[in-house]
Each structure stands twice: as structure tokens, then as C-alpha cells.
Length: 293
Length: 337
Image (cartoon, rainbow over all chains, first blue to last red; front, side):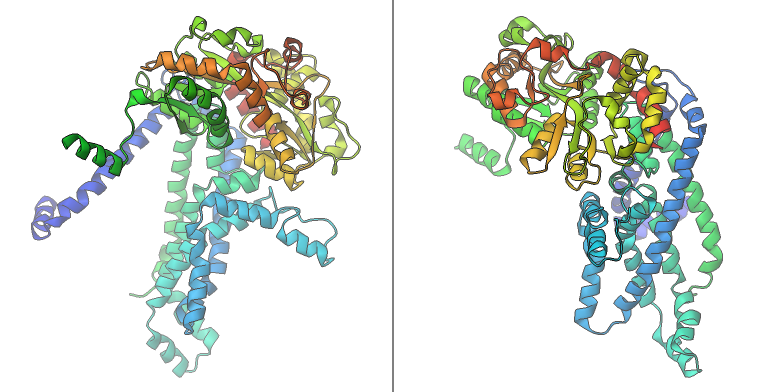
């Protein structure tokens, strides 16, 4: 049966499929048209003082060859890597507790703590972190009052501050994905390992951790991709000193009305995202085999 | 009965009023919208019986929307910054104004007559605002004081527009904004003093209020708002002058309510309305015949005479519209990153 016949047969047996797929196909088409518009803008010349772009040019892309842009692109990848790693380190114990804690109240408390950030906008969350990380903020005030430090730690306008706030942004997604993976692990495997003499740590390292690998990979990949497009957090916590690709798009494109250059930055950023995610997929392929079959 | 049913239906589903029943004004949100709603819009509605509806958004969002609805504008009137107004005008989005239909415009300051398409609604300055409780030994009598080594890591400036400090550096280097390259070395020397770049008024307020950046190149109206909130900020006007900013008003090309739009702009230039704007937001009147409360009139950045307007550093808005991308790129490449 050729592919066309197969699709036809599927639609016949599932008549609702066409009405379900049509909106998604229309959305995909609209997305493609928008992407095509961005691409054509990136290949047009900027005319100072005008909203209309000029003729075709590659100047917007050649301008990206300056070291500054390479530095911001690398900085973006590094921040994404750090954010995904720290989110995993903090999120895994939370997800584990969420799945294994038996007390209903404790389970609800963990769930609410983890999920609440999803209900706040990124800007609100970021402003909260400004209050926590500032020179007169919560952390520095406590450390100063306890006499542990004499001058405030500089958290704001640093990469560390940006990563801390981004970890908070990506945490709910990571925990939800990890919890889904952990809850699907058959407890019989753990009991079998323990009955064969494995201690709790060994059982975790040889059974739970490998079987939760699909969740880890999904969580890390999603955190990584999500952080790539972060704007408000690096904009406000970074204060112009820690810039990611989206901040550059805003600074050099939109705030300057140079929309062709903004478009070229978007295209380059998208290409970088796809390249890094492909590499990530290649790197994690051997780990996927550790998951349940 | 049929009419009653239609009326009830419209009431229940909140159908918008007919287009000719209102004047639509595009402006920034928050306190800017409130400022116009409480002053010019109120007077306009009182005189004409026509309500004013506001559509709000950021400078660039509204510019893009206007571009996309060219010829069939969403708003009849648009407020925007003077140099951004040139982008609208260059694209044919603003109608050429007939000043004979705006009698009150005869009192406008020269610097507020931006173009045949857009006129200043009020003015302000970008100048030095600082926390005198945290910066004790500097009075900021000159812009050159910003370069003092003791201000290392203490200064903030807007990240959306470096034109103010670029103009200042050019002047301090013996040039002017048209020959801004003369100030490049001077600007690079200021880099160690920058601690952060703020992204909007709220961000500027937060950085000054917490003392995170005790010195800022700040919008005067924003500084006065913070002072009103109890933040101990001193607004300094350097001897070289502060950098003038003008927010403008224009009529959109293609509006079907041009006559009403002219009446609205004339209401905006009423001396009493201009005095109210100065009182409410500490912005400078755009006209020279507004009678201000002496306490307001003495504030830095509020001008009551033509001479005061001329003392400020005035970056030609048309040049600024053309050069913003070049300045912004140089600033991002050499100072911010």
C-alpha cells in the first residue's frame, strides 16, 4: 500500500481526523508564511529613516561575522547549557519526591511549589528575582545582617543572576517531565534489585536513574530550547551586561528600527538553535537506549 | 420591537460604538494614557460631545501596527516621540497639518514645531538624576562629572536609546551630534562607570530606588514621579544643558475624522491644558503662554520661555530617526558588550 492510500484509509477509519488536522495544518502554514517573511526581510537592505527595506543584500549576514555577535551567540549556548544542567540537578530530587512521597499534604505542597511559577508571567517572576538578588535584596540583606559579608555580593547584572532566574523559569517543565518518567518506572524492578542485595543508592543508580533517562533527555532538551528564546529575564537581570540572542534582536533591531538586521539575527539564532538541538539529540542518543524498552 | 431587540443584543454583547461616535487616540499605556485622558481628552469631549477611545502599546508595536494598516488607520491621532514621528511621516502615515485649524498652535515653542506632519505635545529632558544620599561629593554641574573615576560601576543609562550620551560625548569632545564620531573615544572612557542599562521607566525607577545604580541618565518626568513616591533623587541640569526630548502628536493619514482630530490637538494646546500636563506629570508645556504654578515652573526640564528651550541640547529629530540604528549599533558593539 502506498503512503497516499494509507493516509486515505486512516482518514476513512477515523473520519474526525481531517477536522482535527486541518487547524494544525493551517497554523503550520501561517507559521511558514511568517518565517518566509522574516527570511526575506533578512535579505533586504536597511534604509536609514525609512520603514521600508531596500533591495536584496547579504550585508545583514556579513555584519554578523564580527566577534561581538559570535560572543553573544556562544554566551547564549553556554547560558542554555548551565540553565538546563542546574534545572536538572535541582529538579530531579523534587520530581523524585513528588512521585515517591506518600503523604498527600507533602505531595500537594511540592506540586504547588513547583507549578506556581507557571501561573506567573516571566516579567513578574523576573522582578521577584530582582528583589531577591539586588544589592539591598533578600539574600544580601540576610548575609549582611548575619555579618557573613561586609559588602553585598554582586548577583544582579551577572551571568550567575541570569542563570538563577532562568532555572526558576524552566523548573516546572523539567519537574513535570521527570515526574512523568519516574512515575512510569515499575516498582517491581526496584524491589527485585533490593531483594538481590542492592542498597538504596545502588538501586537508584542502576535501576531508577537509567529508566528515567527519557524524562531527563526530554526535560533537558525542552529547558535548553526554552532558554534559547529567553528575553525578559536576561534583559532585566542582565541589565545590558549579560546579553542573549533575543536581547541583541531587541537592541540592534527593534530599538533601532533596523528590522532587516533584526530579521538576520533571528534567522541566525534559529539556525543556531536547530544546530545545537541536533547536536544535543546526537549526544543523548546512546543514553536513550538506557530507558525502558 | 425589532429595534429594541437589536439594541438589547448590542448591549449584551458589547458591540463597539460606531466609528463616527468617537475619536481614537493611539498612545503609550499607563500614566501617559491617563495624562491625556485627564487633560486634552476631557476638554475635547466636553466641547464636542465626542468620546475619546485610547489604543495603547509600545512605541515600536504601534509603529508596526500603523504601517500594517496604512490608509485605513486604527487611530485618528497618534502620540509618539519626535524622532519616531519622522519614521511615520517618511512613510506617509501622518497627514500634513493645516495649522490654521489649530489656533492654539501659534503659541508653540520653535523646538516643538517638529515637522509639517507632527508637533510637540509636551517636552522633557534626559539629564543626570542621582541619589544624593549615596553620592555625596559630586554636584554634577557638568556632564563631564559622569566620567569621574569614583563613579565606577555606578551609572545607568537607557538601553533603548543611547543618543543622549552620544550627543553629550560629542559636545564634550568639541563636536556636535552631526559629527558624533568625535566623541567615540570619550564614550569608551565612560564604559567602566556603566553598571547597567535600563529597559523602561519601571526598570529605571527600580534601579534608582534600590540604589543599585545611584546615578542615571534619566527622563526628568520619570525622576519627578520617583521623587513623588519618596525616593530621594536630585535632578541636576549640567551647564552644557540637558538633552531635550519632545513627545509629539499627529493626525493619521486616511482618518475620516480629521476635523475632530484638529479640534483635539487644539484642545491639547489650550494653555490651561498645557499647565495641567505640567502639574500632573511635570512635563514642560509645548506652548509658551501656559501659566504654571511657580513650584512647577522652577523645576529643571520645565520651560516657560523661548530662551529656556534654546538652552537645551536639541538633537535634530530627523537626524535622530536616520542615525538611531548606526548609533545604537556602535553603542552595543563598543560600550554594552
